[in-house]
Amino acid sequence: MLMKLASLGSLGVVVRFDQLAEILVTTLIFVIIGLVFFAVAYFILSRIFDIHHEIEKDHNTALGIIIGSIMIGIAIIIAAAIHG
Image (cartoon, rainbow, N blue to C red; front, side, top):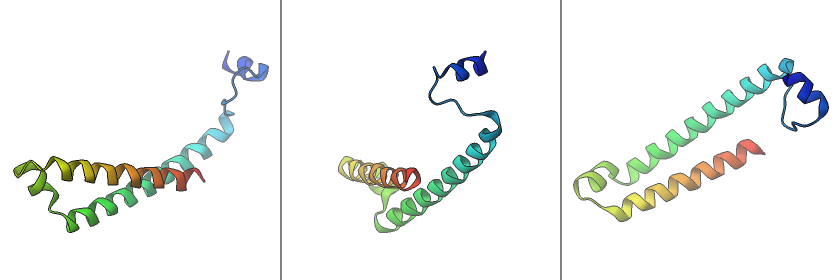
């Protein structure tokens, strides 16, 4: 059924099964690289700011918003780099 739909051209994003393994491996490699960069960025930020103490003990909402914004920005940069 899926192959019949793919041959009709109704699904524009269908990948042939012989190419699927290569795409999955490439995706997993980029996910691992992205997670490593994200962890390194979080480690650097935790060295600059005492994140856990400030957010959990002092209830510093502003720092939580700033750290979240920085993480979203880093995630967008990593996604753009992976996408090309």
